[in-house]
Amino acid sequence: MLADPRHPAESTSATNESVLKVALDHGKASGIIKSHDRVVVCQKVG
Image (cartoon, rainbow, N blue to C red; front, side):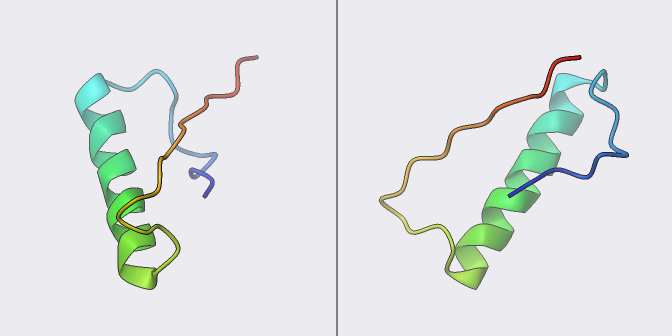
């Protein structure tokens, strides 16, 4: 899953966590992410 490129990388940690939670919930609901899966979060720098 990719984040919206218009979303500012410098936003607060709480905002980043809420965006991540929405993405994870969507992935679980659509069956992309299973309960035993591990999720790795990366951020492009530069």
